[in-house]
Amino acid sequence: MIGMRATENLTGHRLSVRRTVLDHLRHREIIGVDPRRVTDGSPLPLGVAGVTVASGGVVAIDGDRCIPVHRTLSNLLGTDGYFADRAALTTWHDGGYDPVLYHAVRDFLPPREKAGKNCVPAGTAEPSGRAHLFADLVVYQPGKLPGDEPFRSTGHWNLPGQLEIFQTLTGRVLMLVGGHTRDGRPFLYEQVCGPGSVMAVPFGIWHVTYVLDGPAVVFNLTTDAGDAGQVTARPGEEKYRRAAPIAVTLRRRAGRHEYVGEGLSYWGRPLGAPRTDWLQSLLAPGESLADLHLYASPSRLAALQRLAWEAYARCWPEHGGFQNAS
Ligand SMILES: [Fe+2]
Image 1: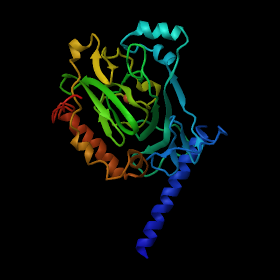
Image 2: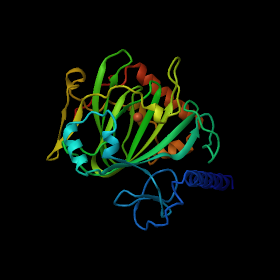
Image 3: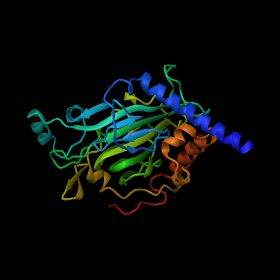
């Protein structure tokens, strides 16, 4: 009987979490606003039942289409991003070429309090970056830009105490990550992620994502993991520290890739991904990063932050060495 009651409690908890997630998405008008039903798609491991992605990259819950923010070439050109051939991008754009590069849903899952078990209910006060985990979803579209860069994000610098972890759910992406180790040495590495891959990035780094096979659905968690004297901010527009981008970018021709840019002389050619053994123990077999966000105990979340800081103290990503670049 006790076992049965525990199972019922577990099922009850999952149903309650699902209701909270749906209320959150309705409140933010991510769902419940587009009458076009989605009738096909594959399940996505996003912590609640019924989330699917269709072949064109449309995410839906119970067939209810999610309304993301579209990021286009116009948006990309409106930034100080570093590109392989900005002149070619501008010429094409001026001629009317303006593809959607990715769709984004900020706070796809409701913010999660780190010291407790609950997610923030819809319509309550703005949560803080120090006390909460935030969960976004991005769907990168397949394609290549003039200048031979794969469709990509803008690229930005994370805050010094910002922990960010990604899980690629479909497709394949390459993330270029650069910054300085705790003792000041520059590093630049690439990490290719296919379905199920989980990667964490070191504190205070710059990163940009390129799509290798799309649509690529990437879920990410971020939080201010804190440290004395570090910047505290609600992750949002202000998380993108205003600093020059790393002047290195990826070009892909005939299935092979190469890096170009004047930043190569300082940052060096990108290395392979660092070993992040500490991260491997984070998820149980079959558990998704979204499951962690919704269901992990406060002590597991505290352990996650502690392990990340311990890795950083050992000069992550250099400790343990880099694997060979692809
Ligand atoms: Fe980031």
